[in-house]
Image (cartoon, rainbow, N blue to C red; front, top):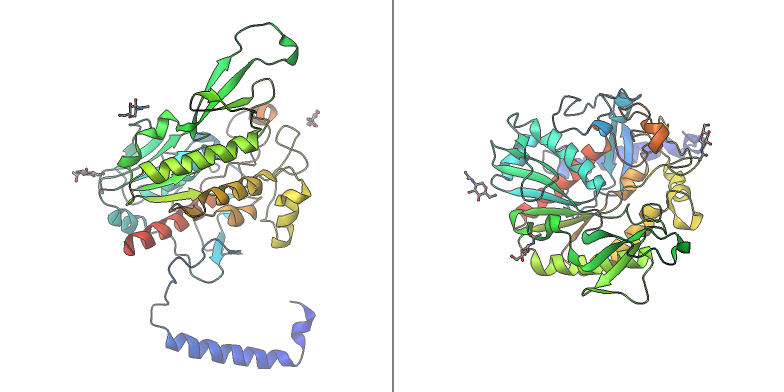
Length: 390
Ligand SMILES: *[C@@H]1O[C@H](CO)[C@@H](O)[C@H](O)[C@H]1NC(C)=O
Ligand SMILES: *[C@@H]1O[C@H](CO)[C@@H](O)[C@H](O)[C@H]1NC(C)=O
Ligand SMILES: *[C@@H]1O[C@H](CO)[C@@H](O)[C@H](O)[C@H]1NC(C)=O
């Protein structure tokens, strides 16, 4: 406690606070209300709650090995799962899987995007399975991974489309003029959604989109760059990778607005940040932290003006928020709460010998059970709220 709290005013303050609290709570109906969204679930802080335990363990059949941190014996899994997210101005209840699935009966939920959405999906499947042990794998309609919950006739699946737009590898045609080292290009059609999700949007009642961590030059170096096309023709002058992201966002957002039924709840999840410390992923960057970051550290880590190795999440978010302005696609802003959690990545516990030597630590995806379970709590609240308000 800061010493200034010991001033003579302190007892008075406590007394009046208690008085106010008593008056206030007697005014409120019981049980204590959860202020529904649009109450902001995205701003808040983490508190330690030692009694908290995850809803599932390493035996969930939907795990992906590299994120199954219990099985991979990651240190501190107990601690990682003891932190509870407390939004500033409302309660965030934990999902009740049976009640949630009951309210979703005969409906389907789709995730579209990159592996961070897959990470989200795996958490969701493992949580929901608690209420339906008969859940089984579901991989139809171009889904990369998913499950069907027979008790409720609910399907939840992930469609892998890392750039959202269609893209394909085109090897270099001729070997003339090879000085630039170009080996070929990845052609991106900014106005065509990837095959993996273009025709499935009618199947889902809730869709959660994301894209972001592939839009970086280490994924597409100058020997194998992204080249952007519109209406079948290369865009001239060529766009750099972030401008390409902007144009793809605009086009995908307008496709979603036009083609996805109005009644479908559409959400766009913002980036969850990476936490590489001491270097980027390919320079021995590490995330062997035992505690979440302090709020005062966040800007230092993530504000692009500080030019740190993890600045890309906020950069991407800025572009996404702009592209979504004025649309009916809701922001699912998981960034801020995830920024704290440098402690919750798989790091060196990847379940495979040599994985760290080859790929470095994983300070981008998230341990399961772990932080994505809180994303699930938030998503289920937003879905509940949307269904209650029509
Ligand atoms: C299951 O849900 C789908 C909609 O997702 C619906 O078309 C189908 O009729 C439902 N099946 C049963 C048996 O209710
Ligand atoms: C999507 O549907 C359209 C219209 O039915 C069809 O022409 C196209 O081939 C389909 N695309 C994929 C990838 O299935
Ligand atoms: C990473 O660390 C290893 C072992 O300390 C060292 O040999 C290697 O050069 C480092 N790599 C980079 C890119 O810094």
